[in-house]
Image (cartoon, rainbow, N blue to C red; front, side):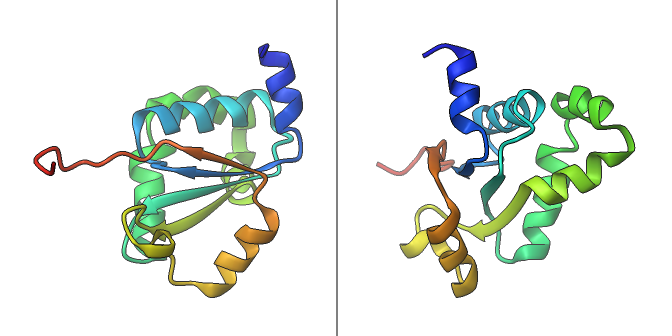
Length: 129
């Protein structure tokens, strides 16, 4: 699949990304936001106990990184509103039932809205077998 057709496919799509604070996920999210601003929304699953912790991780581990510098420059003063419009944070954990999502309304929204799932989650405990 060529990049152009992939970008066309993602036009007006909502995407659930697991492992959102991981290396590959950050690159994926930044690239799509930068080259396909018509993506409808990203639902980012972050291992977090609550929404406040998820917001902290978003700012410190994802959009606060140098990787997002070009997108910040492209959006200028609208960067924060662009991110707020395009990203919905999901505090949870891929290793728990129902992804550890406690908000029933958010689960229903995701069931209705998500078009694409990109699973980039991985265990961070390499001692488990």
